Length: 440
Image (cartoon, rainbow, N blue to C red; front, side, top):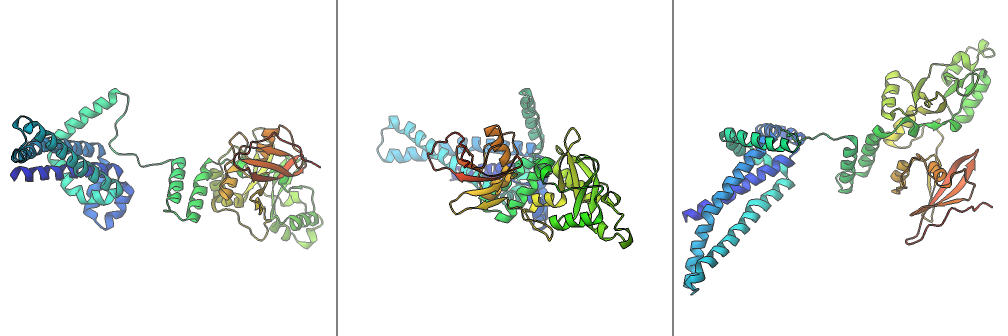
């Protein structure tokens, strides 16, 4: 009976150390710190242990090894003796009785050791690591305090072996993530139902902004409304009313000679006796200039800090390639929205047959966010860029580009720009055909 009680105690000790080991590895420090209000002492002890992860793992391994060896030393002989007595009463020949009893005893002990002492506590610790760790932290930390000198020797030796293979040991598990890792975490949380759809989209937009350059968010130069410095007040008011723009770039001798930005409210403040003499050049304000390769996230902070709502975008040669507004950057975070002076862009329009009509300037990540369709990757940044890369020239209206999963039909071309494209999913098993010219 004494041997049985000792065996049960060793089995429980093995489960205890296994649960502690996996709980320390799986527990999140931020979550433990958040639980400090409910169980402050246990949380502080657990966080302290997480900061010494290498030592805690060495302590758990020491405990597991001691319990496993003790279990083999006590349990297997005891169970074998009981089985041997039973086999004798059952009339099993003495010549095979001992070997058979030992084999059965070994199988029983190994089964209990694996299920009760290893697998069950491991599963519990992985499923609820913080809760398990808070429950085990006091006795486990007491064990590691008593055995700390031995644990340190074992840990230093193990770290030396690790360094021999070119790996630097760490005392605390890294819990920081870069934006790409956070994007995967957000996507997985959304798929698992832990994040509402609107929160998932918002978080993905915020994290994706770190990877976007200014060129991806700008209004391209052909779509920019600008006025010459010589424009009078009447011309300025006419353009502002016709376009709904409240901030308009002002250029000098040519389009690349951008002098600054004119705000419509400055026009309204011109005295009546000066309306005939005032020009856009007189009312212009300095403009923020940014390279198209710059970070959209950094530009957002610059615009907020400088109190400006518009930036002129230039390429590496200093030529103007477009402009970015604060609204453009905010829409990358919260999605498209309209104000009283905004004209709806209509970037994606769904059709009854399952196809969509999109603006040529639509980025692939925007298409994926709206439809879930992921177009093939490449050096292009827009749907129009994909078409140009495939056909190698400016296509005509009605021309098609066949992809593996989609068919792209050119709906509208204006001034050598692909303005509108229809994207149709291909039927399963349909083989893509070469690009065709379907113009009338």
